[in-house]
Image: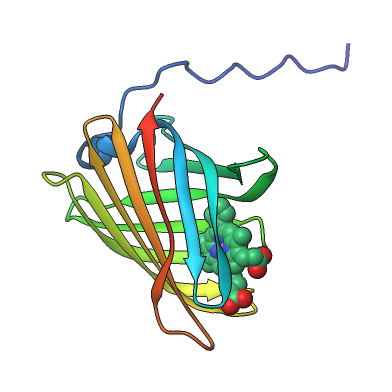
Amino acid sequence: AGVPAPAPAPAAAPALHPKLQSVAFMLGTWRGEGEGGFPTIKSFKYGEEIKLWHVGKPVIAYTQKTWKAASGEPMHAESGYFRPTSDGSIEAVIAQSTGLAEVQKGTYDSAKQSLELRSSLVGNASKVVEIKRMFHVEGDELAYTVEMGTQTHELQPHLRAVLKKV
Ligand code: HEM
């Protein structure tokens, strides 16, 4: 008595929301390697896993983690949501393990299986003023680049990676 019955578990495999049809190429678990650099830092190599999934709503959930290629030691991680609209535009909110928060806006192209986003807001950052993210899916590969602009350096590449669907 007094203990409420547990809520029912969510459906295991909900149907894809129609609004996600045109960006469904992004969905899945992706794993691979990337490299990073910037004029102010030493370049580095990393391993990465990205998960993009849905629960039947018109939103893609996103989580990412990275690790040092040589040792497996954890590096940067982030997570958020991608919200496409039916007119080819898309927005994302992303929270980074460094405390930085992004609001991204851009466009997708279902035929090219590509996605391009630029920050409309970067919050709680000490150096970063803008972030550009580009994704491209071809076959079982997801490739992306991240460019950033800082208080001292204009928008230029920080990361690029190629991941395979697992
Ligand atoms: C350095 C931002 C993602 C690894 C930096 C710096 C900034 C930055 C501002 C310092 C640059 C300077 O001192 O002039 C970002 C942003 C990211 C991102 C905005 C995502 C949008 C990542 C990821 C990794 C990573 C995914 C690892 C896989 C590093 C490393 C350094 C660095 C190793 C140099 C060492 C350090 O200063 O800690 N990043 N970063 N970053 N970043 Fe990122």
